[in-house]
Image (cartoon, rainbow, N blue to C red):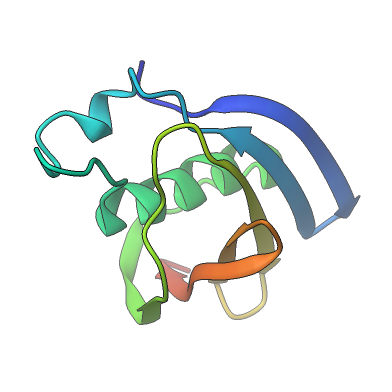
Length: 114
């Protein structure tokens, strides 16, 4: 299993969405990262943000870079998380924020090719 278990999706408007997930322990990304305490890698969080934004907002653009990213706390197996996505089509920027129990886990801004 490569993607988290989807609990719900709310598309706020044309360029904003909120997704709710559970992180089952059998997710591929937990294997070997780390043996003593599994966490979701930061690169996976970025990948998921791009994946879901592409799907929801019908974005057909290539990755261009990460403007900023901040990881405040790890995401562990069995946690329920929220992913907030905002797409700025004019600037080709995708903003994302992961929350766990309404507390920030990570956030960032990704540039996609115009």
